[in-house]
Image (cartoon, rainbow, N blue to C red):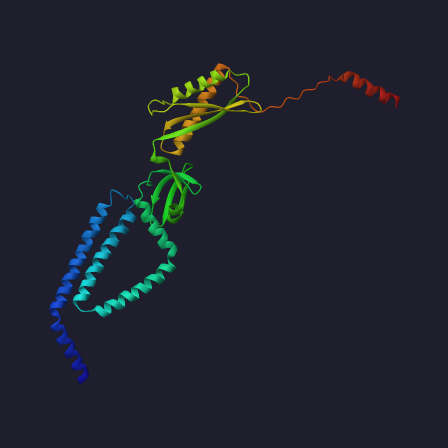
Length: 294
């Protein structure tokens, strides 16, 4: 009992002696706590205009808040002269961090990729992109996955790491798209008239002057049953669906104009021609005589 009492007396003396340091450490912790909350709110508002994903904004603000609080905790432990304890905690945290990092390598990779994707200026929610064999509108960029809504209304969920490491085509980065139409006309058609008519149809339906572009027309080959051509023009569009609609409209209008002018768009056919005329009646008669003789 005497040893216990002596130990308690020693702890009491040490506590009384360190009351100023304890008070300062508590004040530091309180200040760091409120400072971390203020920093979290500030960071959340500061990056709100650049990152539309709430989950990513919360992650970044919480990381900033945690760093401020850990800094305050470090100062508090230093004031209390817990340097050796602090070194032990840091060493243990480092080893544990390595083990946890190896175990959650895939998850952490997707999380970091999600943060990186959220800060990219050439990719955002609402953009129409094509990547990894999928094409559609970006619906969400979360901490773990990337969501694309295809034209057929199907949702495609891809890991963030896949998007970050793969090339993608962003149709929304430009307001202009070029459309190419390939077609063919019969060999007897007036090629100059076909060219002029096609350009007039495209120009009247898709104003090229407003976007400072012009219609391109080229004959490409003598095919088996047609002379083929390529027509290229520009439209105002920010996604592949609008491009598809414009191409469909152009095909319809070109077909109407060709039908009106009597220009034929041939399809593959095969003509069989016999140089010798067969006398079917004589052949039948010979066959009947042969049967009678038998």
